[in-house]
Length: 90
Image (spheres, rainbow, N blue to C red):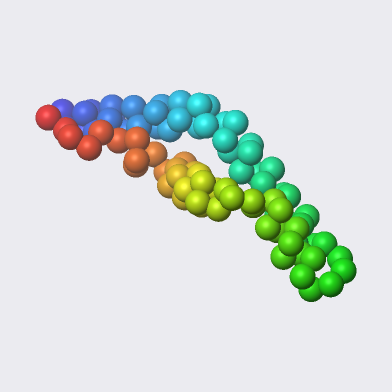
């Protein structure tokens, strides 16, 4: 009985992870795009200050938001569905 209940809970967690990923796909795409832009900016040629200026232009005033979004994304990385499991079981 307990095993069946645990399988059900984990199945629900995996389904919730897939739903979360589907809902967050746009944000994930934006994070990947920003990462590409950061790497491109880092390769800027010229004086040593130019890559720093290019990175600053990409990030702008979004530092806190980007970090928050990356941390949120990493919480679910590697098919980690544990954040989707119920926290208060009867």
